[in-house]
Length: 182
Image (cartoon, rainbow, N blue to C red; front, top):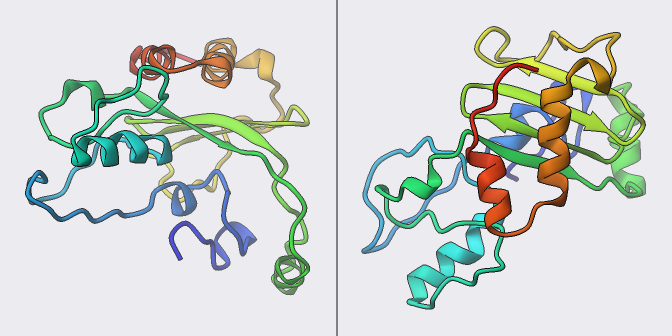
């Protein structure tokens, strides 16, 4: 199953803010798709606009996502993409699997982003922060935000706030703007 952790980071479920869960492969075949690999950042919100484009339907102005049909579309050259999980109660089976691995913790709700340059920044509902540089730490083993608070990352926190409340093209602007320092 895509995005399902099988022991990575001592977890056995989806919705984790780690690359193994965030980055999943997607295959698309059809007359409007150019063969090859594409490393642009896309997300679930891009599926509806893409399917509408394939069907020849006009895009809606109120969609947060963008069609990824057509490689030359500059609108998909995002600097980052928002990530989020709303948490919720785990099924008993998930809890039992987590306990077997010694990881009885379930992810609290979080919001954050992953940049095209490999910065992953996450803010949890309780105020905890995680920050990873995937170029230096591809397995996300060293949380650069240990012992720090949201206030230590004003630029990143402001971006998460913008992503949290954005709508349609406002989301595009929040995703397209260069990231800058924490």
